[in-house]
Length: 283
Image (cartoon, rainbow, N blue to C red; front, top):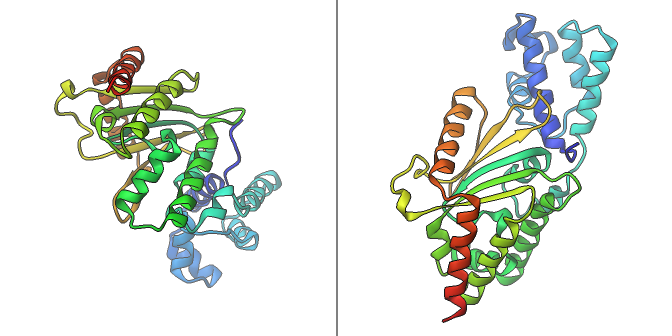
């Protein structure tokens, strides 16, 4: 069982309602006219661009779609109620600009390539150095961001943690962020994380040369429920982007498989990081 995530439930509900409309052969315009809704209201529902589903709206849609089976109706209404609950990340809405922590909480597996050290694998001091370098934040705000990122990492500590498979660019391991002591502690932390049964860390070496993930990092999130297909998360300096169309999922799956094959094995990766750590200790 995975941790309950209202955001994942909301996505399931959006997809179920969209499937029902299409199965009935109704256009969005026909539905909004029958319900006297604005077109944007139904669009937000079907695109999962809503925050708190209204059970009454769900009942109205089920009536419009002639859903009479009591079990099916009850299941979708219950899904709407679950989607209205607050996740822990709601306490950090001043920090998180997107929904990645909410999707992480409901995932059974995370496949990621990162040109930097992934947030789920960072030490607190490494986080502080990163936030000081690029965000122009005061110290109290930096501590707030560190607290939020550490809360994200707790998914790897729960009873049924997701599988984390990450490929880290070797350049990130050489970059002197926070000074030699911070870099050393970060390397040692990665080595220990790689020993966990639910964590796989591979290093993409310089010798790999050009590779298909050079455009930037990404996360593929896989979910347990078949009603929640996988999605891809990418980040820009100004936006969080989520892709869930099959062609996009296939493309990123192939990219991840390729960089994973180009990367050092888990054993070789651990040895590479241990060698770097020894070099730092001897300086």
